[in-house]
Image (cartoon, one colour):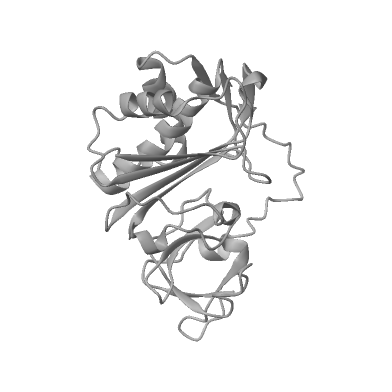
Length: 254
């Protein structure tokens, strides 16, 4: 595993490179990370704390620089000269300074986390992305999605001595009036099958707008994104609000 760390600005109590390497190597000790490169950033302007695992496609030194999305805010940073010819990539960013801990946060999957220190936060964030690497690259954790990754990350971090807690918050069900029924805005996509073509109607970069792409797998019941492959061979988790179905068998299913 190769670890590349970049500090936009350092504070007096910032995690040092040696401590970062110790944390990540300890968490990955029982995982074959031969093909893994980890890019860790601190305090990039305009970028929230987040992690992304690019596991489905191989990366090369030429694909290191992010071209789209929020990670484009890191495009100005130099490319490391130690990159292998092909690798899987995990990018992580910690926006909160060390003095803001302990802290409690909630993620987009309705999980609430509590971290005693920045090191504990880093441990859980990396463990979550490591779960994706283990699942999609090493064939481990079958059928476990984001909730499974969160659960494993907390358990794995605590097993290695980190002070972190996490729980999935109960979903409050709204009372429905008898004359109204919940409308699924993505109902038309629930029957999409692998191999079907869809049309991209929105791409913030404009690169794929009005192009078609291949659906890689069927959509889960609670998903808001669809896994597609564009004609240039890249795989994406595209928001379903930005695509539409193409007419199938003379029936409009948009």
